[in-house]
Length: 183
Image (cartoon, rainbow, N blue to C red; front, top):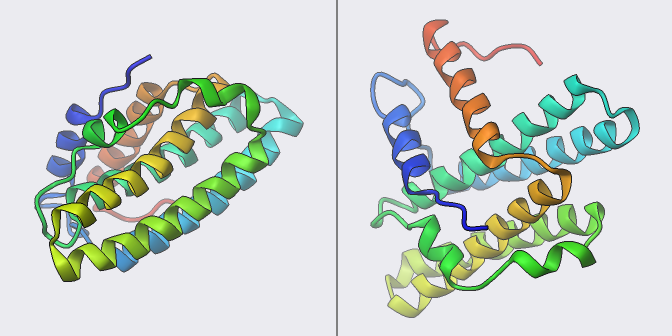
């Protein structure tokens, strides 16, 4: 199944533009956010796997989208370099056949390792602006994005559904003056 991210990247980019007071943050903040969201996804996953309630499933979807949102922000704003296409990252390799072999814990661990690798690669790319370093960065983002996709597919979660939930949450934040809602 081919997942397209071009429209999602554009919608996130539009949402992050003024009058949104947050805008894009530096890359270090984005990686901190990715790490935070991986932790929250792990907690939501553990809760969902024990309770199986619709509310816990929806919370897990929101947390997965929070990670995807941060990855999109990273791709859109990798130190103001030209935007990295997530669709190009996914075209680098296939991810469909790994599902059967990975457990949930392995996927969360892989997300953390992928985040760390992408963070180091981005620092190298920013210094060099070398095409080979850009390709390596895209591969790092592919690892992170593919792991998230594997997790959603294994859980039967729709990435489009996650996206819709997140954009609804963002629209509500905009209506409320961008105040962060209590968890």
